[in-house]
Image 1 (cartoon, protein in one colour):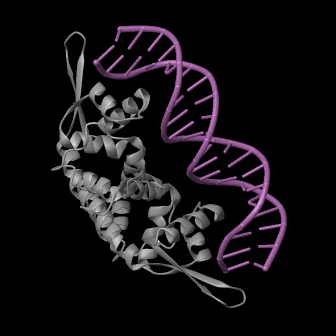
Image 2 (cartoon, chains in turn brown, red, cyan, yellow):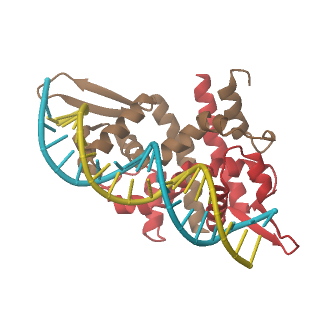
Image 3 (cartoon, rainbow over the protein chains, first blue to last red):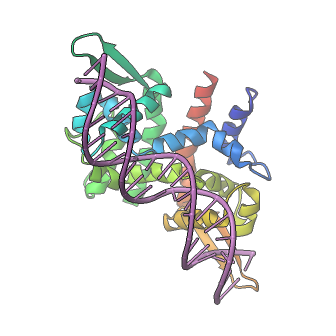
Length: 129
Length: 129
DNA sequence: CCGAATCCCTGATGATACTG
DNA sequence: CAGTATCATCAGGGATTCGG
């Protein structure tokens, strides 16, 4: 680990079982940690559901909207913007009239599904017990 | 999968890559899903940090408080209560004067660290790229 | 030492109306 | 169709005080 403070912090969390955390954990450092940011992202209200729908196949904006009962247009927009900004989702505009926009997982987005599915499996196994 | 609706929902999310999500996802069902609840839990402000500190070793209440810069007494209490109620953390009271209380991970809490560490590793690898 | 009770404030979410 | 803009609401989180 030698690529800057954020990586060091992430590594601390990632390998917490074997590496000692510092005696005093600075909350600023914790807030800035990429791992913290990722779990916060996943914890956001609609992120997980949108990721799962996009894992199935690409979707148009209103297609997602219709498929998710109870989501507001504003929150779907914001959720997709967040995911796009994070590089997990790709936004493609087809210059037709009226415009058609579809959203799909990026390679990063698809690769996130691996640890995410493992976590979900853990929850399922835990329910069973 | 045959152990009730919550399990089915969790399984849907867990195996989203191979199993189709329903045409219309009810937000009530999504909110009730154990996987949703778990990512929300992890996304809460101090949960991850407390889990990591307890992964290192058991801690007394004020020991945690001193070790986490910026956490309020109220939030540490609430965080530990949440984790205890979820079965991830055990609370032990030693009937001394003044009372001593320590917190440690349960077996479930320790087992959660496995998928959690995998997710953290994914974030670290992603940072590197 | 550990925690409950209260007050307060900000940010996240939703409802609604408007636009290229 | 796919958003933006604005206003209203509500819950998460912090500061402070009190109690066993």
